Length: 246
Image (cartoon, rainbow, N blue to C red):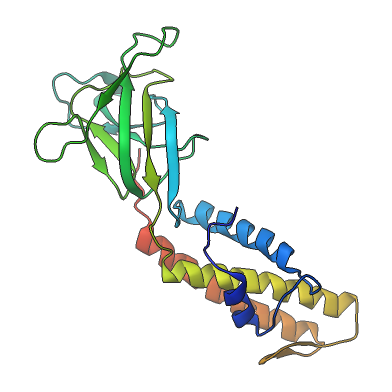
């Protein structure tokens, strides 16, 4: 299901043509293309730009999900990394499929497994976010990182943390909307360019856009579109990326 990064109306305005069940592409095909562009944007930026709900996602607490701090405090489990020891006290939140998610809108519940090993039965204990007094963990909403200061699960558990909440954005950022619209429009232009070059003798005309049947003209124009979308990708990544080295 499309997340709503762009719409048929916005794409039609971008290309200057209306789409329907009988056009190429059809309205149905356009929905598929929008979903594919949304996935492309999410993968390249490492973010989700729509509000997405997570329900009882279960996370491991191991070398793949944990974040290591060089500040060792009493009560934290230690693990060796070369010649140094680190306190393993933080974890990146994942969705139900195991994908790291950010930014976090809210955490409605978070529980830690109090069992002693990976073969013991689950024993979930609900803990709360620190909000100035009390609570067991801090939440960095931008990176999706939870840092425990008490009630931390044992390092190495595969079913260590269970959480529910929402991540992404409550409304689609305008730059993301613009990028998604242009990426879908670019795909339409590419498809029509191929049809013009190899399947017909016609030039491409989309309202104010007119590309004569000349492969160099087509390559030049699509190169401009590529630069425009690449610049938007860089802007969005700079605005919303908050990567942390593990």
